[in-house]
Image 1 (tube, each protein chain N blue to C red):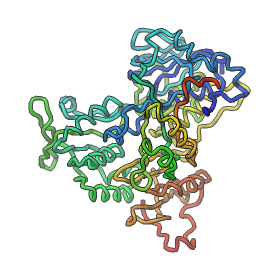
Image 2 (tube, rainbow over the protein chains, first blue to last red):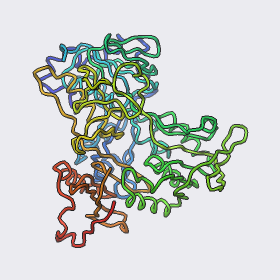
Image 3 (cartoon, rainbow over the protein chains, first blue to last red):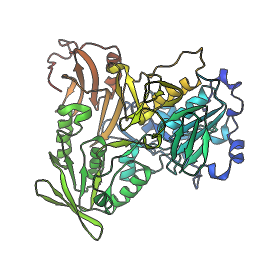
Image 4 (tube, rainbow over the protein chains, first blue to last red):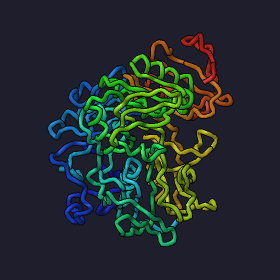
Length: 110
Length: 420
C-alpha cells in the first residue's frame, strides 16, 4: 500500500538505506531525534499545482478534505491515526495523484 | 566530478531540502545523509500557513510526510554559519562542523522585515513566513482585533486579507505600487482580484504607504498614511516580499548575493569567477538559475513546485557519475493561490509580457483562463477557477507556441488581444 522509496532495481544496492529506520532511530544521539508528537498522527500534503478540484478526496474522506468554492481545496495536514483507511481511500481516489500521505510506520520495507 | 559520495549534507530543512533527501534515497544513495535546519521544527509545508492555519481550520501541524526509509539525520534548530569549499565542510551554529562529499544549499528565504526596526518590534506588528509566525498571528486574529492592516500587494498579503474577511475581521490592504498581484499576474488580472477583494469587504488602498506606526506602551494602535489619514488597527501584517538566506555563504567564494545563489542549469553552484563547483548544488527559493522557458534568463523562483522539481534534479545530479548524463532543471514555473473562495493558478512567467488574451470564461463570471504573450510566443497562462484547462496551455508554453493563439476558433469567436 505504500510505495517503496527505492526503485526495486536499486534496493539491493541500497544497503542500510532501506527498512532500517527503526534501528537507526534508536542508535542516533538524542539531540538528533525529531520531536515526537504526543499521539500518532498521519502527515498529509497535497500538490495544489496538480489538484484540479475533482473532489474525489472530499467524498472519500469528508472530515479531512473540504472544497471551498469551486476548486479551493483545504485539507487536514495532520489527521488522527484512526482516519488512516479514509485518507488512503482519498489518496487512491485522486484522479491527478496529487495527495501524499505518510506511510504506515509499522509497515516499513514491505 | 569526484568519486561516489559517502556523505551528503543538505543545508535547509524545508520543502526543497526534504524533497532532495527523498530523491537521493530513491536514486539509490545509501550513505550518510544529514539535513541542517535553523528552525526547531521538522520539515513542514508553508502554503497552508497563510490560509487554513491562520483561520484555525484543521491542525496547524503541517509537518511534511517523511518516508520511513529516509534514514536521515536531522540537525534542527542549528543554523549553518560558514561554508569552506576547500575543506569541504559546513560549520554550524552549535560549534560543530560537518564534512561533505556533496552539499545541497537550500536555505530559502525569510520575510522581508519592516524597514523601521522600532516599529517592526511593536506588539501587533507581524510578518508571516514560518510556523511560529502563523500560530502567533492566528491566535491574535481569534482575539477579535478591531482592524488588521496588510502592507503589500502580493499573494501572501491577499491570502491573509481573505482569511481576515472569512473571520469577519475588518481589513485594510495598502498597495504601494500599481495593482495588487501585478508582478505575477499583470495589472489586468491583478486589478480583477483587487475588485473581487473589494466586493468581499476589503478596504483596498492603491498608491498607499505608511508614514508611521502609532503605539501606546509598546502596543500598536494604528497607522498614519503618507496622505495624512490615520487608520486605527490592532494588527499590521507586513507582507512585502522575501530576503534570501545567503549571509552564511559570505566569504565562501560562491556567487551569492541578495539575488540568490547562482547556479547552472544542472543546479551546480558557481564561484564568483564563474567556475562551476562540481560538488555543491542549490535548489529552491535560494537558487538563481537559467530558465530554458525564458530564453535562459536567470531567475529565482520562490514557488512550491520549483522547490520540489529543482531538489529532484539536484539530487539526481549529485549522484551522477562522470559517465552519466546530468539532468537539466527545466521546470516550467507554476503556482497557486487560494483567496476569496477562488483558486488562482499560473504557469510560466509573465515578466515582460506584451500581450494578453482571455481564452475561456470571462472576468464577469469570475472564472477564466488567460494567456500571456511576449514577442509572438505564449509565455504564461493563468486560471481563475479553471484549473483543468491549464495543463494543455502548460504544454503549449513548453513548446513555445505562437501568441496570439488561434483567434478564430469556433468556441472562441471573439478573442481579443489586449495589453496585460
